[in-house]
Image (cartoon, rainbow, N blue to C red; front, side):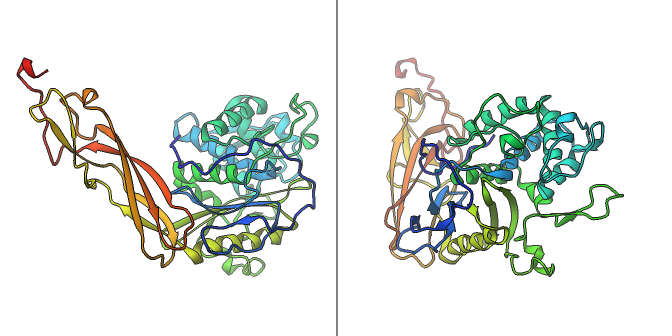
Length: 417
């Protein structure tokens, strides 16, 4: 699992959500002096994943029922299993009783049916099929509840501190098949921030996710009278579909819808324009259409007002700390550079940028020659401040020994040890 930037702080308080509670909210936080749109939702967030910057938020840490956005975690884990060689997309999955008794969105799998991992994955990602989701969960872990343990463990590793899963689908406990419900009386909850974090991991660790999420329709069986239609009406390619044309959003290629009576209508979306990708989450909209129109408002706020700006290029010499001291070398200090690029998200047309930095260099006593090229020798924290932004953004990176600019060899004289 690759690390992502930390997206803010977490609120440990657990809240209860009543259906139909979405109201025109005033507690929406934007970035800097740019006013955010008005939203009629329970919760929302907009982030730029490469920097982790939150551009807009509304009750982002309130745990709410996520409905089928839960399936993003199932999608992630199954994709990880394939990536690690524990599963193949062509592997056959035998449907068990639990999957066959799933209700809600489904493809009507019967116990004993066999389908490939990929076929079931598409049914889950495109058609939000509960039975296909459970079948995949049981294929990975033997039982759905053992898979749920893996889901919760993975959520904690990702930093999803206000998320708790009771199943692989997002169904309410009462809607799970009798005999397959968990012992706990708890329900699945997730925050908008956690949903954005999960989507960020999918994008980072499985960049080919779009080969599933952009499928507009899919015929699961040759004998099916009608194909599965993607619940995501905002796909850019839907601009050519009469019923969805008004919802199609330029650059949008994912990710997952959700709906139950308790959750209302939810959607985790992601779109890329001009090299900048954004992740949006809306929870508690009052209709299918409304979750998409609210998502468009959230994404427009980001794309209309912000851009990603690289402040420091990879392998940049840090002014004032071009070298660090070492011991047991023919030289007493060695050259260092930054490892990766440092980027911040800033208002479009922002003026008077100010970049400051602080360093934390490893003591010379701990830097003993010979050092390998690329050896970490400390950290560098950059702060970027521009007009129109209330607070500076801060990012910490690493300083590395630059074996290209300098060469370090052990000192042959014992007296210099």
